[in-house]
Amino acid sequence: MLITLTDAATKIRAANKILITAHIQPDGDAIGSTLAAMMILRSLGKNAQVFIDDTVRRNLQVLPHFEEIRRPVDGETFDADLLLILDTSPDRIGNVSKLTDAPILNVDHHVTNTSEGVDLYDEPKAAATCEIIYKLARELGAKITPDIATCLYAGLATDTGFFQFSNTQADTLAIAAELIRCGVSPNFISEQFEMKTLAEVRGLAAALNSLKIFYDGKVAGMTLDHATAKKFDSTEGFIDEIRVIDTVDVAFLITEKAPNVCRVSMRSKGVNVSKIAAELGGGGHIRAAGCTLKMPLADAEKILIEAIGSGFAN
Ligand code: 5GP
Ligand code: MN
Image (cartoon, rainbow, N blue to C red):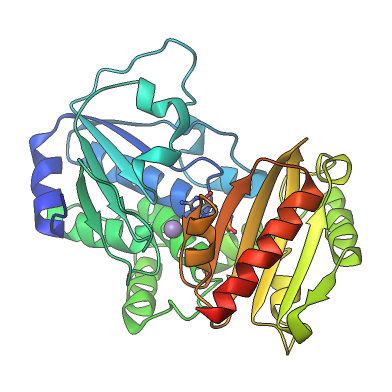
């Protein structure tokens, strides 16, 4: 059921033991929003714990209280009276769903979130889930400490490409300014988040070497096979290097994470890539979306290029 932000705040006020989670393959908004929510709820006297069922890439591990995030282990349960799911619909939280059968409160900004049977506050106009958590903190009367502000700023910065993408609204910048007043060091976040290992830079070189152009230059794509991809931790930012090509509308990166498991990332300047991703079992935003294709890399590339081609037609 779709609910308002005030309803979401009421549900949080009524709960005492809150399990917080976000999507697998977590990004800065997933980790930033869950950690900020944990600190906010604890400041209100609640018992709050973050679980994420995935590894978290190194750059994000600098966020305050990162070390308190737990990963569910087999057979584990967690006593909660509310499961707060952030930045995704409930189908992308891995085994966190097995920890509790507490009622779900889902807070998200993905246009593709079509969760049914749960309380959902979805604000696709919000640049990041962290923007909504900021508003929720205000609604709940919580104080925004420097640590909370840092986590919220991290999510805003990640999902707007450091305030460059079209989802950057006046509100986004106003909230970012307020977070800086609350104690964020913007340079700390940008320096930590743009940092790459030597292996990652070599990985970027390998990805760029695979660059192919389709549909008269409107589409640019890169692929990383498993033998190459396994040498480094993260492909964050790789796709941005080809998104900038002047003729390109849609850019994609396919990373073979494991044999026959291909992660697809898409970025666009116009075409609605969330529709293309949703057709392939994934989701996301109009200009940034992704999916996982369980098939050999060459097949994934063929299917994706066809789906992008139909995206131009729609
Ligand atoms: P990225 O390319 O950075 O991994 O993802 C871009 C956007 O698409 C993010 O908002 C991310 O949450 C969303 N996204 C990526 N992969 C998937 C997927 O498999 N399913 C859904 N629902 N969303 C995805
Ligand atoms: Mn997000």
